[in-house]
Image (tube, rainbow, N blue to C red; front, side, top):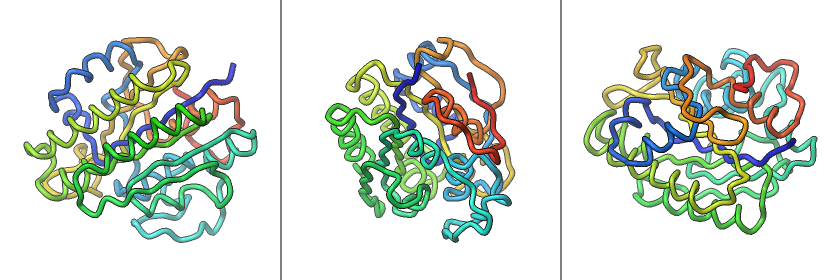
Length: 257
């Protein structure tokens, strides 16, 4: 049976930052989700390459995006939104970093909203509220919600695992809890990150940069199960399977169910 899905990505959220941020919803998430705290992203562990790998389920050397500057693919691979749109699924993007507009091809989204952050506090809350409102009014089959303050205002400005970083992670988890409480219960929620970070940067193959969390809350996932490993490339095949869409033949990841 096909489902409805919200994919939430918190930019730069390390698993240990999630655990140490102090938000009480973290423990509830662990009880209601199947999750990994040892999943891996791709190299280079940089925002746009990691997002392209998430939505296209291949490494950067295959999709060709190795910096935060988008360039057209020489050998195009169909992404997650392409596959969902081919199945007449209503898809939406709500994000705060304009470069993410290139994750899907033109005319494949029902709705897209970008609230540029420009180092402003509060954009995670604004984009979350907008996404909740849209879900409750339009009932999309798939919605991608990007929260960017953790990376920009936490990691790069004050350092990963700093007090400010943990506060911004705490706020992001508060946004996830609000989403969980206020949208219909027939939605599966997948929570992840694109990369981690160390000091005031990321992009290396250090464990602090490469390790990401993946939480999957919904009827197809075993509650409270912690599983080892996993990859950012597994997310697109997982969403496609839940929504009964055929994965692209080039995809390298495997469904988490």
